[in-house]
Length: 303
Image 1 (tube, rainbow, N blue to C red):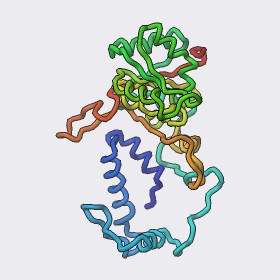
Image 2: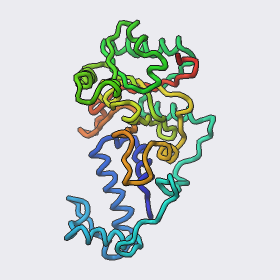
Image 3: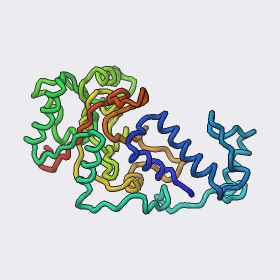
Image 4: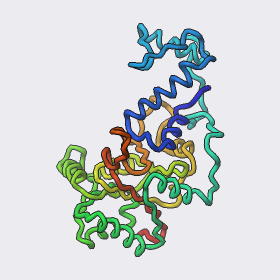
């Protein structure tokens, strides 16, 4: 059995309870152990090399380790990996999830996000968008809001809306006039942790797992989606994507590993932050927002 990194990540997203690094690490270690280390199709020298304390038993040096990996993959020492087609990051990953019809993508995204305690809305016009955002802010008694530099927020006039409601707002500094070391960036970081609500756009929304996909390239900083206890994300119809494969293909990630990635990070957000580490009692909001709201913004909402 061979399982690609993207397929494991899909299993992580749809598992829904594994949302944090420790769990993420244990999950991959367990999958590796069962799929690779104990699998009978592997050479004898790779079977049973599992240590409950650190995963795999320590090997004497880097060359030995890489040599065993190459042998398990059926490659000769020093042989490069198989060439991929231009722009191809992963091989075909079919048969994992049922196909999603194009007309059902947004419905599926909303259904999956609601399953993990996220809230979904649709704003057909500017008035409806006002009502939705204002109601969320009132319910949270929000006096402070931070928002990212995603272009959709400027298109809906988020700064003017917040000012009209008497809400103090801080945006991520414009990179053309500010640098990360300026007082403006420092002020944003401080206000992000003091704010009650963070507002962002998205790069995509992923239907099959109900995930929001954000990049630092578009948002400027991920703090608006991670620091405040409530996260509001605005998205458009053409940003709703059916599968993880499609998202990975469209993300600004170069196929050449030697080429630098645009932006510093990509974040997949599947519902509110949650943990059940202590006595298996589910608690939300420990490691991030405890409320996540996704608003579909139709073209008529844009300025």
